[in-house]
Image (cartoon, rainbow, N blue to C red; front, side, top):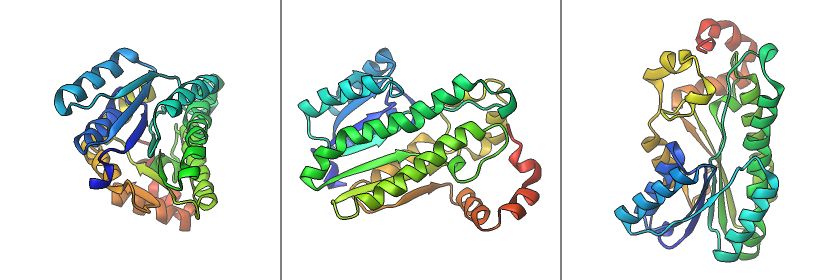
Length: 262
């Protein structure tokens, strides 16, 4: 991964979980980091850890990705300061609930952060990348964007939108020298479920299948600078998603209780 040394990597949602792991792994390869998150206290702790471990002095910014005006202001400052080589759109959240019971404010918030905010961050760095004719946009989507299940219709809709956006953007940038990669993981062992699944039912049911942040981060970092269209994890879950695209009625019928883990 020599291509990461000296490159500037921007990571949203970098104060914990997968985002913090991505920062750690990128720093270990000599990347210069710009980390953003809503939680400055946790972000500062990540920054201090990177300084002590790798002597990397990351830039950190408080940012609510769901606030478009904040995105514009913060990324204007970032672009004035550095030349962005890689943007990892990691910020996002989910709330699991039956749609009939869902709070429309929660649904709106997921779409605003997971989709519109991701788009705003991407649009902020693209002119610089296009002018330079190089760069990499990595969007963290989900297997939920490929196959929805009960109690995740709103979250799945947001991740489906990320996939649609990424696919269109990839074609728009086909001759620009800029790579666009989507990452579609199954459940990852992070604090995501403290918001998404307050009952703890889903986390308990899928515990044995959860991916480690270290594994997911390694797969993402290894794809930087390469024309990787998608990273789908785990493979067996993605095989189910692929089968679903071909035979949706059959998969829904046979899936039965397997889809009702929440």
